[in-house]
Image (cartoon, rainbow, N blue to C red):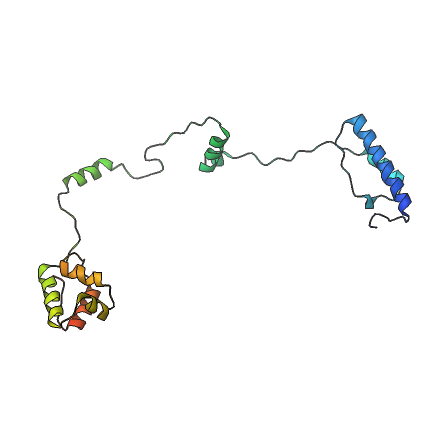
Amino acid sequence: APCARTGAAESLKTYISSFLDIQARLIALAHLPFHIVSCTSWTSSSDLIAMSNQDWETTVIRKKRPTAASAQSAGAVNAALRSGAAIDTVKKFDAGSNAKSTLGQRAAKLDRETEELTHEKVSTELKKQIMSARLAKKLTQAQLANLINEKPQVIQEYESGKAIPSGQVLGKLSRALGVTLKKK
């Protein structure tokens, strides 16, 4: 047995029963918290009696108080909200910015903007050129798409004028159809 340093199990039982007796007396008389220590550290009953003179006051260890910067962090504010504390927050306009406020200038610039911004689409000449070259080779849209490793939908968009012209796709189409195609 790990606790049987002095020999017989009977003497160990005696030590344990005397220890429990001392513990019960200390708890009843002093009302102090008592912590059990492993029995391997005692060799005689005098060690048990010596333990009754120990300081058994409770020691509380706390974390460091939060600094002002961490108390203002988003996490600290959320923790305070969860705990139900009252919080007063103020959102400062343009806080932390060295730039002058240009909101009015930006809004006026947008108001003056009259140009319509749209993507460039396939021209009417280009879509007719692709369609006539495909029909001259007697290919369907799906067959042409398969030749240039593109989806049939890409060919359909080019021929309907809905596609945004890409030099890469136009190069593939030029090679497959044997015609020079350029964005216009």
